[in-house]
Length: 362
Image 1 (tube, rainbow, N blue to C red):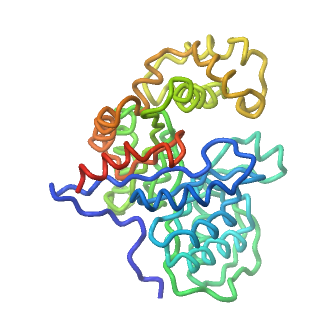
Image 2 (spheres, rainbow, N blue to C red; image 1 turned 60 degrees about the vertical axis):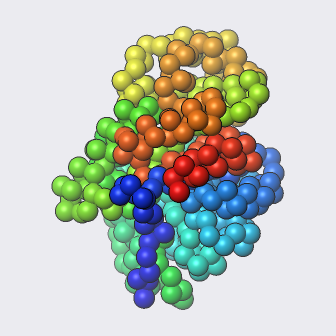
């Protein structure tokens, strides 16, 4: 039971290396209506993408609901949470949702999970994530998906008796951990099936991150090649200048403006975090509390981006023609990425660059 080939298995390439797979996000950013995601899922499969990702947001982007919808609109493409959280659903509910979707899709679900920030968990009344609770929650999830009875009392909660009544004959969905800093990368290598790297990492930062994940896997007695490296790359190719600015520069602002998180992202890339002061003092962001994209328009975010060093965009995103984007993709592949998760642009905006990349790899 549950011994089928993992949906994360790499594809072969004619040059002896694993072929670089491409994935993309459905419904990127804030969306008031989830229905366009169905057409995006169909288009992603038509283009030949390996994985369709969904960044879960409460309100219009519930992963369980959309995974079911995407799964029935497609037949081949993997459907991945990128990300949800282990403590946002009761363990039995999370495992039940994942295995139901896995059965409906014939084993195409990938569950990406993250830590998020303590302030969010405090605000919604859920426990903060710790390394121990994350590891234990992942273990509980896998055991439930295998049909085991779980009794647990520890950092992940207190569960006297958990079990799924009926378990479909499909593989346990792979667990991918979203990580940025050294502790998270080590956690991914030691306990997860893959790592989802953050947008706006340079190829050099991806290389360092991939090396850290695989070293941690090896030290834990695991096969380093069995931990898949997903590098998230914001892409804008063939777009009008104002649309490109919104897709890339405006999105970058939403990450860098977050206190603490922006510093960590700059540190991973080896950049001077002092540049964040000018960004956060920009009139569009000064005094702002919370996520910028929840209170600022795309135009306002693009305006604020003028305060960022240009290299923070050009060195950590794929821009320009299809050929130029392909060259950027190769730099990420050479850095150790197994799959690129294309972000920012909607699937219908990726046709030219995705088609050129997949044609070149055949």
